[in-house]
Figure 1 (cartoon, rainbow, N blue to C red):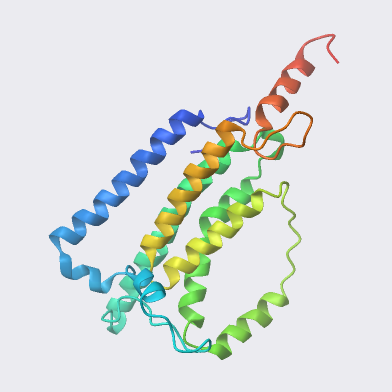
Figure 2 (figure 1 turned 30 degrees about the horizontal axis):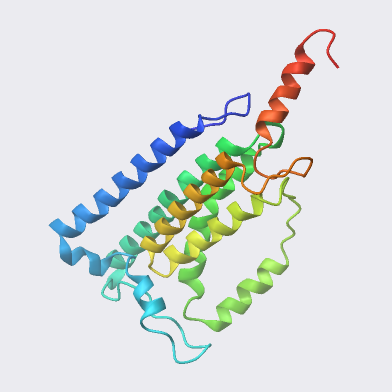
Length: 228
């Protein structure tokens, strides 16, 4: 999917329809796999939520036990990592559709769309690297501190998309792909419902989510000869 030149992407009701179909299809595929091959669940990056909620660590510096402990050996570990990264991408992809829908042409940023899709996969790999090593975590922090990020987000609400992308990557990296999908579902539906309802809007106040219509109307008026 891509944003059209007029900044519209797809109509919001149609987007909600495709989001619902996408999530239902993804859930059906996962449930079908677990029903047919119940033993495969032990080797996939799912179930990490149980470790987060039911098995808290004894200390703040204690490493968390990642899901799928039986994914031993090179082949098993590689398959686990591939599924985790793929799960992160599948959870982040519909988030990019939401961004393309709600952003006006003047504020649309293709690089941000690409970041929303790719960042969770990068974070997943990073979490796999540092989750058992405090030294690696500090090394990564030092490397990140030396990298300068000069890209400025055009709207404060764009930060939500970046934070969600990071959260999805963290969830997939600890073996909780189901949490990544739930986060994606909750964000997309809540964000779109707020956007459709223009929640919190007041007359004369600055609007964060619903600028597309007014900007397009201004563009159309500017295109009419003799209009100001």
